[in-house]
Structures are given as C-alpha cells and as structure tokens.
Length: 229
Image (cartoon, rainbow, N blue to C red; front, side):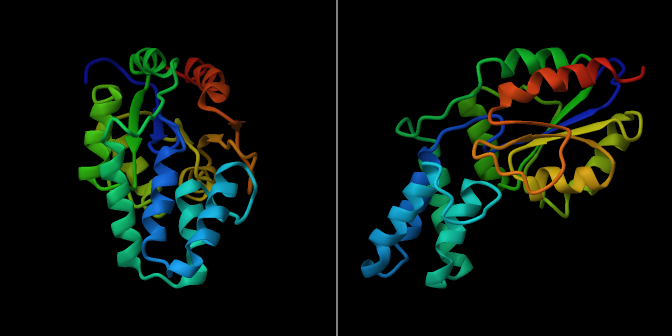
C-alpha cells in the first residue's frame, strides 16, 4: 500500500457512496410480482409514500423498508432474494440513474494518503463489484469487502483490517446510512461514526450526522487531520 496510515475509514456502499430512489422503486416492483394481485396496488402505494418521506414503517434504510412493507404478505426469503438480484441487474442498466456525490472522489483521493479507506457491503461480490465499476469507484478504496455480513461482521472486519494494514488500534470511523448495520456496532466499540439519514431517523447516538454524505464529510476530514501520527 505504501506510506504510513494513521487510521481506518470504513464506508458502507448502498445509500452511502451513491444515492437515488430508482433501485428501491424497482425493488418494490419486483417484490410486488410475488404479492397477490389484489394487494399489489396497496403495497406499491405504501412503498411510494415511504420513499417520498412518509414513514409507513420503521426501517434502517430503503432496502429494509421495502422488505418490511412486504411482511404482511408472508413472502419467503427466496422471493425477496430473487427480487433483490433482479433489482441489482436493473441497476447495471442505463435506465437506472444513480448519483455519486460530486465531492466524494476527490475526498477519497485525499483521505487515502492519510488513512486506510475501505468499503464494506452486505451485497454479494457479483452485485457489488460491477456496480462500483459502473460508478467509477473501482479504484477509490484500498480494499472492498462484499458479503460483509453486517452488523455481526462489522467489528471482526475492523479487527481484520487493522491487523492487515497495521493501523493504530481504535483509530476507526464507520460511515453509513443503516444505523443497525454501520453505526451501532462501531459506536458500541468506542469507534467514531458518521451517519447519513435522509429521513432524520436517529435511533441512537452518533458522532456526525446529516441528511447527505456532503453534510458529514467535513467532520470526517477534521477527524482524519486530528489523528495522532
């Protein structure tokens, strides 16, 4: 990797380094195919309201919200997984418009000079890596870990990365939009956290918070500059 790195900056993927409602609308449409026809309009209406900011269900992120909205229909895990993978295929098409915050690539370039910058996604490799390529972020991180099994896998992954890259212990910040997966485990371990919540949903403590990634990056930069050598 080259050079001394003073800490570990760990990003979530979906909803953190890119944004856009198109995947969630597609996910809802794919789930609806498995719901009885008589109930589809009701489900899709609730999904649309959730994405518009009306809290139909409590959920950590829009993926979780769409699945929670389907709970009354008792779909099996296979149906939800198929809906998710079809949505991932759609995300690779030109029809799916996604936005990488304009400030992120240059921020990551600067951050990589001072800290290890990693990305952890619960999505499988075949869904995560091609999408990174599409977004132009394939070389933006020192390490990308698909199938991270968060929240249970977050702290073991942090320990693994600290050992692999020989960063000072405990100098970690986790950045994400799903409180249960990205924030709560890191917060409980005493690490720094930056939480993105477009809907102002704050189920617990956090060090930095904002509606968009741009809102928290200045604080992340200050954290990096303040790390001991």
